[in-house]
Length: 533
Image 1 (cartoon, rainbow, N blue to C red):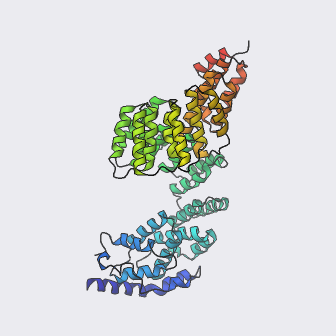
Image 2 (cartoon, rainbow, N blue to C red):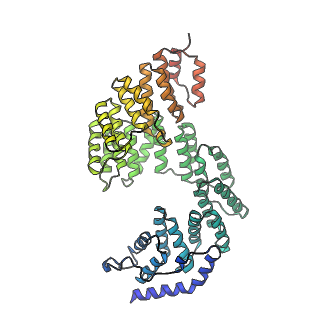
């Protein structure tokens, strides 16, 4: 009886506002007929009465989300809502917002737009600016900015407030086309004329598309305008800037941004410390890196697998075998460990010299899943090649090909290092030549695994006096801007010393400084040895 009363009350409220809601949607677009029809026969749970949700509490909202997600593509959301209310449940704001979040995560944007159009038409609850913002968001994603602008004009003036303006700007910036970025500036100017406050998340969203090399020059102007608008940067804004400078291996700018962050009284989070720890580790500033790792350990509750994965990678780079083993045991306590964790652990144990541990983890990974990706084979390959165990490395390569995986640039780079470590220089040079024809993505070029193995190849060629090969590989480090670190340039200078190739000191210093590296005592010592007589 209570379920029946709830159904009657919900239907009565919907019918009361039906006409008002329909006129709103009709003012900006023509809805497809499927949205105006309902199918009383639809019910995902009709075949199994035991699977019906017992109440609207607890799992109620999840069950509504499940119905919307499993709805056939040719059926309207009307049938899902009809079935939901026929079971005696109400449609409330919490249930709608939870459903929208799930649909957004699954990129079912058109279905989410249908949900919001149904809400606006049927009005199961009193709508707010949050409902209109969701409607704008999914309209932009599904129908474009032109439809969204028309829709914005039809929204009641009382709802065209600061929140809604900020939301439409963020939605514009989610699509990083030039015209949408220009439109966001237009709406920001309107907000200034109306004395509306611009959200820090608007500027965070504005900076994100400008992180690309072609647009990066505009970031200082954006930050200046941010100060003029009196907007305090949020933690996400600072993290984006830190990540940009870390990717460029620009430690000076990285340090400046972090100082500005502290002056602004913005509390660092886990992502902040992860970015800093990785950047200083790659720069071989281990003491500074350890201080940020200690901060990460204080934040580590064992409930964040991403943080544990980062610690595994960092402990491997810092050669901390005890801390690495402890962290890996924490990861193993999780009910489901993702393959990425296994791959990071394999490489980390290899870096600290525990090859047997890396092999054990590799065996566990093979027992729980089929190894069918090149990067998975590359993880154990990097361990063998680091120590010149080329026999086992060749076996892994043969298994890789047998499983239908194609060796990539990182594969050949690891093999080149392995052959050099084993003293098979000719094989190393031939492998290097084969690898140069493989395409290398920007993401792979910036990865720690690629940079470390490439630097070790430069060091090995320099020790052997193979200056031409060392310079060839060094160019790749230059493209990734890793040559900004002094120790990378010094590795190449050692090749000049070993090969007894003399250069003018001024030319080498000018080359080094132009790349952003700062000469140190080791640099000047090497320059004296290769100075022209």
